[in-house]
Image (tube, rainbow, N blue to C red; front, side):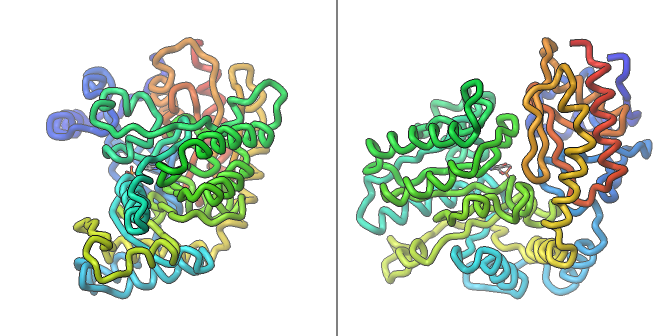
Length: 444
Ligand SMILES: *Cc1c(COP(=O)(O)O)cnc(C)c1O
């Protein structure tokens, strides 16, 4: 690549490559491609060891909401650090975890009043699957032990989460280790027939779900979905009517609905939670990523009274014995509380709407670009496919992006923007213009 920028830091490079097995990476690629050594962050910007700034266009794996080194979140963590850093949550409790649970409950109008914490997204998914099955077990229906997910869904990469994930590159090798589950057709409108409106296609996909549950409800514990946006498989977007129908069908056939809002929760979809757009409540809601503003590992599974009550008993067999060491970590909870404070005081959902409109406007030339297909937007996520014959497109795009001050990591030939919410108009202009430059400099 002629345009490639190579941050110089041979010492950090070689030490990192020697000591760290980096995630989601073929380590051999770093024989030729340098790592990006990040030394500091401020707002949407990350700076390398030569102090070159880059816009964090994907919010550091979809987690950062209010910028790096956000003064308010920093102050909350500092304050907490002087009081209590961590304590176990079995038999103990503490202020930050109580306040966080109460505030999350309030955001969901009390419908999912029981918060079970873990440290990462995949663990939250594991918890929701185990809780769902255990509920049926406690109700003397242990035969309900199968799970259904959507074609192209991603729910994490531990063995349980991977078994309800439909992303071949993450799953294929491990197939012998996984418990089979069923994938029903995706409502992603990119799969619609030519001329078929997204809503009609979503209803058609829902009909396929209904057909499956009609035949298999007796052995099915739960349907798990990524509401509105299927992230890892290229930001597939779908009409909320699918979620509405899925709720009705699950109710009809006595199957739980698990909403995995690990990526789309906390405003990403344009509402605080994506399920609001379908006006439904799931039986389990999984949250993580943005929950602590992207600061500290934290996840939660929220469930209804009905679920909770089926475990409330004198019998040990009815107890949910799942445990994670750092469950409800006090520092992470304080970061989450500061994050919720910012949502309230800055009226973030409203403010983001104006930003969404602005970016949609300035991104029109991307949408119209001859190499671009299916430009789409939902809330604070934008995505489009690039027509290219380059087998190394994602990596080449990333590399050229660096010379335009952009950190973007396409998924295959899908380019997406998922910036921190603090991005301003000038930074959105940089994001769009940089992307147009990259598109024009690609040899396809
Ligand atoms: C990221 C993600 C997960 C897994 O979260 P980790 O913290 O990476 O384990 C699960 N589901 C969805 C929808 C995600 O985007």
